Length: 516
Picture 1 (cartoon, one colour):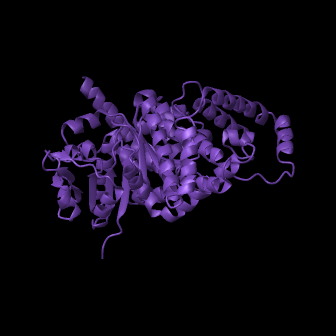
Picture 2 (cartoon, helix red, strand yellow):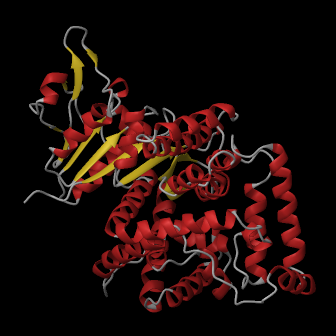
Picture 3 (cartoon, one colour):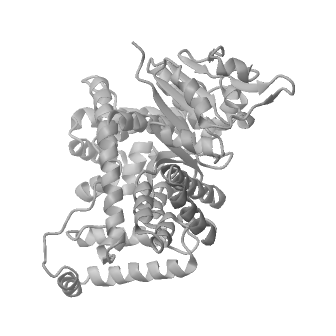
């Protein structure tokens, strides 16, 4: 029987943000699980996957050979991972750019493999957009810099316009109406503005345009992160895309800036093979696990995303409440409101990266004013009660906010992590900071949760997980901290405290001997 082939497309960002790095190493991760994987460059002029798979030159075949199915994927240095050749013109020895996405779709259909990974490059041609939309998982890669973020948002707009045009292909009159509306609007007009403008001319076409907006789903990975604010960029971009573009931008994770990446590229090796313990390698593995979880829960996931998008569209037609401004439910406690205010202030501050090319200065001032209004109103019990009575006159029970975008994916990912840890943890396990972090993440627990319960500062909790012993107090206090963490995580406090403190002493002794 043929395998259940899954297609993962990686594109969206401008050149140099890490699309090739992610494509290759996702392929390596899946191959290491014993799966058959094929990777390919759909943008032949940007073909460079061979450079990090141990091949001196890219595999090339004539377009005729590729069309006739004579070109077979070639092996790489990674068992189970192969590279699909690129078509070229033998008269000029230059790549041939396919004019239609169906060319690649036919090649993919012939592959009897578990996973196909497409490196789309920085292209936004119709064929590239079609491949992204048809993939089981479409990933947009960006970086914490203005031009990369602007390019990612442009890619999301291009996806929407492609979906809308395809939906109206057989209705030329309606398509011409849409084209006239788009031409009359300012450049890079957001989808909600396009829908509103179409509604002035034809309610039926506007309804189709609004429905097609719900179909656009991209998964976001932020590469080259250095600062804490860079790590927070992904969730912030998801918020901005949903609120101002009407598009679901599902955050999968980040990849840290790491010298190990540069070194492995110089050695022409995949990161997960050459430097599997590096920070960036662990980041990619986490993204890969989330992708597997997405695929495992795909049917549930689609329902969740469509429900969230439909809820967002319904909210867009209603007056926005102060709770919506902060992204909290009506039942939110004061601490939750304060954290939400802090988060929204950071996202909507002057010069904030997530706002690039999306929010105008005039709209930004309005949003900032609403955030301050929400802060002043919802943290004052008397004003909050009066606001609730005036905004919700029937005083119906507060509805909980829509499920988080990643709830189904996270549930599957946590189940996978818990299964791995169940095999790893036993009576002989030596607990390290990294293992404690894995246990915490497998239970879906944040450092803030542990800090609020145990009263241990977040700085000390992070130092314990990172094994930054120079930032910790005396050993007797560290042992007490570790045992409290173990109790919180439902681990054996005695075993965790004993093995972790032994590791602390061993590392401290090694540094002393090295210094001597």
